[in-house]
Image 1 (cartoon, helix red, strand yellow):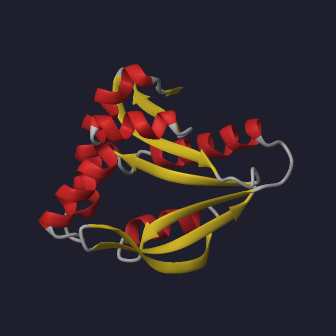
Image 2: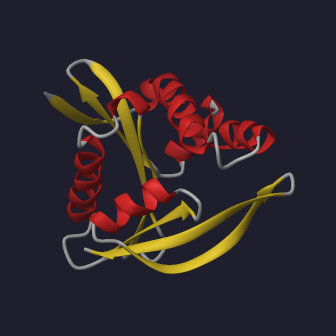
Length: 166
């Protein structure tokens, strides 16, 4: 039995813990230890998560029974028509149990609640994250662009931008 609920500021510590596990596992063979540490602090420090929520990022947490096992984050672009799937991660021990699919469907459901007429969901994915790329393609997304995006301290996110019309 699984359940998805919207996160609140009271969940910052939980999101911090989940993010540190899931992100580190996902990128352990892609990023240097130094870039990993920088990005974990940049995206998953409690202060950063608090600011993301204040800036309008909506987080959802998925549970298997009573165990939190993943999360997603969505933001709205200024045009009001484009939504950005900022984060979607499942803890390693729960991968392969279709929870990622359920979270992805939750993202689309949430976007449709906010914008019932046709719109677009975009996301950035590391070009070397082949597992995630395959997942997004199975979900119907396609590559619309790519780039090397500076994130500070001389680091870059080497991403594909993928899109899905909703």
